Image (tube, rainbow, N blue to C red):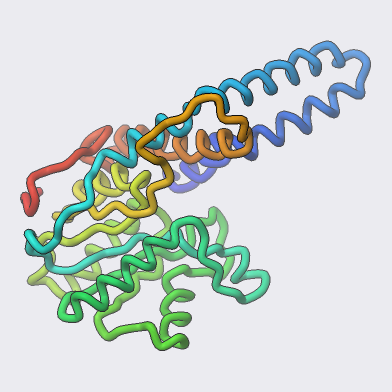
Amino acid sequence: MFYFLSKTLSVLINTAFMHGLLLAILFCLLTIKRTRRFAIRGLVFVTGFSLLITVIPVGTILSRALETRFDKPVLTEQEFAGAITLAGSLDPSSYLKRGEVHVGASADRLFTMLRFASLYPDKPVLFTGGDGNLTERGFSEAVVLENWLDESGLKTSNMYFEEKSRNTHENATKSLEMVYRDWPELAKKPWVLITSAQHMPRAVGVFRQAGWNVIPYPVDRFTSDDIHLASLNVSDGIKSLGRALREWVGLTAYYWTGRTDAWFPGPQNPGAEN
């Protein structure tokens, strides 16, 4: 039930989708004489809201709070058992429609995983993630990535893939089951957690709650240290707000349902036990 509700809610807080849907509905109402006045007021409101979140970069401000929650650690000063990378980099549509492996905005997750696998050949590097779609469509990001890496000659012997999880909670629980099965002696030791900086607070809270001892390693920062006002990029403002809302709503929902250890998880002492 939680999975179904979370996917449904993610559609409702998709600002780009809802913005387009509202404009389409208001345009249709504009062609009907009885609802024309309401449609005009609605268009004025939607236009004003779009300009407001563009001039005042609400999405960027909310995203920056997420992305700066954790600093990137210096791993030469810490001991860790292995690394775990969360899915979300590959575009399912490109693969399902054309059989092509297309890397999206979170490409740095994969680059970092490849780098870890090369730098630490004696440590397991785990990639976790199947398909986050609400309905089954015969896609698993872990399976596609493993096959692509193998065919490209980039797969190393210390890479492992968990292919069933559909969201962050299942990333944590199913991967932990895999670790207890294959490397039980490493289950309680610190693992480096690799995901996008904006997603890191929720991921850390979920993994801690599931029983992991993680060292957050944020990548893929979208925001800069300087926040500029009066941008006229309306599309970017809408998308930025959508990305931020997805994480803040996700943090709240996961906390209310007991899937994170805190509403806004923060840093702990390196190597601290849960």
